[in-house]
Image (cartoon, rainbow, N blue to C red):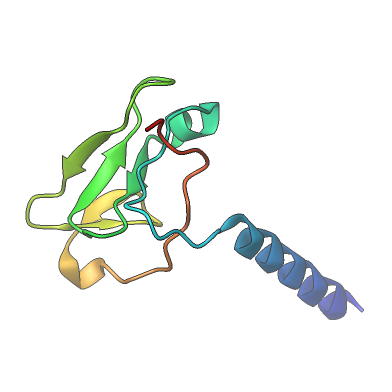
Length: 99
């Protein structure tokens, strides 16, 4: 019974995490309009794995940063060596910047 309960919990958790990821075809720039975006701070650039966006202030445009000779890891939210980088599906940020 415990194993079945644990399996159900894992499935529900996975479904919740997957539901949060909405496929994104933009460059991934966040709007920096929510507390969560500011707290996370950095967001992947969807077209260039060597770059990322940084939200520094609420309601101000994100700053485009570079990892130099490394790649930005979307799960670790940090620049890593290419050997440690792997592609992950792109997810839309919580908000978008104003046009």
